[in-house]
Length: 415
Ligand SMILES: [Zn+2]
Image (cartoon, rainbow, N blue to C red; front, side):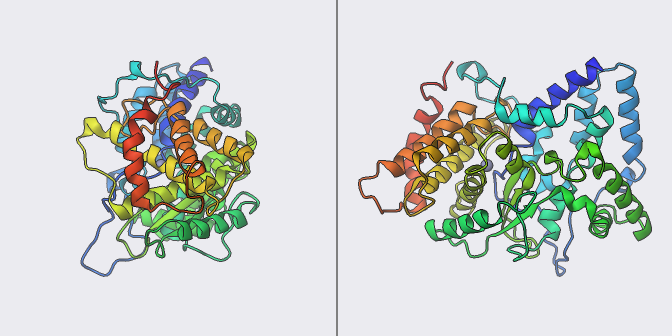
């Protein structure tokens, strides 16, 4: 049991810093196959045939090892590395497990304390009763809601609901409209979709996902799997489909696949997490505005192709920039026009999703750096001499590039 706990804290630590929160993409390479034939919906990357019998057996294999007291963390990472969520190919931040590189960021240079972060504490509390098996189910098969959100959900569905009880539907739709008006990019083709753990409650839908992922399966076999996932994720351990970790993410996607299109995916789980730590009034808007910032980067071409070892630096740059875009919008009187009490909250939102993964290609910036980026965006808007003036997205970008060094090396950012 002790080992289990250790692994949990280990994996949750990396998940929190890198996997779950590595929302957003970092380059706009569309990796969805652009075949010459008419593209078909659900043409997502197939699992290879040799994985056919590998699914539950692998879970049992790791479980047995774990129970025998072995430390499986490394082998587990290797396995996940080789059997990635197919989305990792289009939403590149998902690629954490292959992203461990010898980064050029010197960890000793920056202050980073991952202990006692409210959002991490919340996540840990939600899994404190999990068995190792629950954990493996989540790790191996917990990503279907993401696939559903990217490949199956229609964007801008009038009946879409955001938040476990639909509580964020109106504010997100309003914020999305506001962002489109506020920023000068062509955003008419960007859609928004929810991501929900209750995907697993829809056996027909999960059968379709199964058939798309494992095309050699018969429909009947696919349905059997869907029924198994219904049982697994409908259990108490997974809060009857509503466990926040089934949708603990938000990300931006830019693709040439006409059936997917540009979109922002908003997970119920991450909003639930923020609500649990008292930031529910501003977090959904702040996250959405951050993802919108990534679409500005796609549209204006701010992502840079870099050598793998430079990736941590490059990702940190685009992530902090997205934080700043968000804060500028949230503060601006022609944007969300937030009061100081709300500004304090959104600074906290960004603080909570910082990470210490300095050597990872998914490094988003430390807690203090993310807060500093948001504060910079806030000040730019708040202290503007011309009150109603909205900077162009490119003007903002140029100002950010100039400020980046001071943000990264902010007073509380350095060791
Ligand atoms: Zn991001």
